[in-house]
Amino acid sequence: MKRSWLGLAAIVVVFLTGCNLASPTRADLVSPDLQQHHTIAFSASADSWVSHEHPKANFGTSSELKVDGSPVKRSYLRFDITGVSGKVTGATLRLYDDGNGSVAGPAVYLTGNAWTEKGITWNDRPSRLSGVLDTAGRVRASSWIGLDVTKAVVGNGTYSFELASSSSDGVLLSSREAADHRPELVVTVQVSGTAVAAQTPTVAVSATPPPANTGTPVATQTPVQTSTSAPAPTPTATSGLPSFGHVYLIVMENKEYDSIVGSPKAPYINSLLSKYSTASNYYAVTHPSQPNYIALFSGSTHGVTDDDVHNVSGRNLADQLETKGRSWKVFAENYPGGCYTDKTATGGEDGSGTYARKHNPAISFTDVNQNYSRCASHITDLKHFDPAAASFEMIVPNLCNDMHDCPVSSGDSFLEGFLPRILESQAWKQGGVIFLTFDEGDSDVHGGGHVLTIAISPYSRPGYHSPSFYDHYSLLRTIEDAWGLGCLEKSCDASSMKDLFRTGNP
Image (spheres, helix red, strand yellow):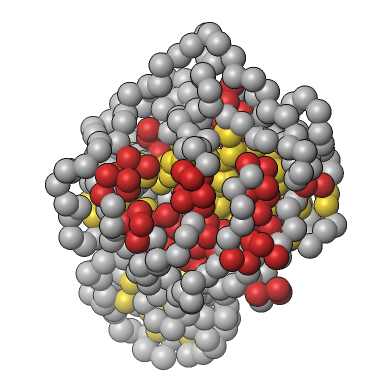
């Protein structure tokens, strides 16, 4: 049954970030009409490292895993995969750097299972059963890395992996004996259209629980349907842009343009390039992640230069929207609700996965986080996503689905499952736009690196690649100009991306 939503139009900008997946007993479930995949995170059943300098020594009780090329150290992990039903479409070995990072991270191999945690040494380490499955590349200090081991994991069974490196700049990783950030094997399974049964997971948060709900509760009911169609937006006379019905913003994480465009690991994203408009000369404004999000939401980094908790007092996009009578929502995967303001949270109604505050810019502004009613009614989890819920909707994937902690293929699969939820809605069809971008790249070009940005709209120019210079301030300016919101800070000096859109009816 087709649905029409009265009086709503949508622009979607999506920021994607990486995922900290929680216990192996919970599946990351998404309703089958949203995507036909679910993920399960398995904890290591054994791990250890071995040293060429100490060929008879065992380090099975260590809270660390060491990988180095000089002196040579290698690490081994075993996972017991059970309860998987369906086709395995992805498998990611997730490891946490507990040291100073590395310019060249480890490679991963499949090995035999003939070893024990408290018995393995250099002299009796297991043999490799595969070539290199994946290589980590540059590793940032105190961060998660993801290694794609999909080729090795075919279903239920026991899998052992070796981590090795030829670089003298080794890595120090948390082992399963560590207090937190233990290794995980995240398996993505394709399921049928039938809903996957599982127990409702318990929310696990990283710090103080949110306060009791004394403000306006977040609505969870499905919006009332109506057969009346909203009028199609028309281009605004002054901006040269369509007055979009809805805007959706989705931001992915930490990938340079060339890591996505043409990559066989991102077939779905690449399929969008011929159908919609691409800003091929688009750049993030700085490093690391958080100041890019804040810049995109407010036109300035407001002096934020790291990913720590900050409370910013500046004016922002939410303020602009409300001033003009437009609505806004943030749908953040694994967000626990209740105006939660701590750095991370795991689980909840979205299933396994980790929410990161640094990827949700709205919560950093004091006129949001110090107004419980406003905060609780505008920011919720992804389970309650509705493409017609607000004029502007920002989608914040968890740290795996945004490619922050998991491979490009994981984020691509997430988008392939999630975007149709918007593309098949009347809110998008009647003049909506999805802005799909990345927070930052790997380089420092123009401050934050060259990143991919796609405008997905009925107004898009199919296959068009704009050569114009754009950045996060340009994207904000595009939303501001389309809706006559005025401009904020550095967006006032930026050009809108109006060449990505045609005029006329959508």
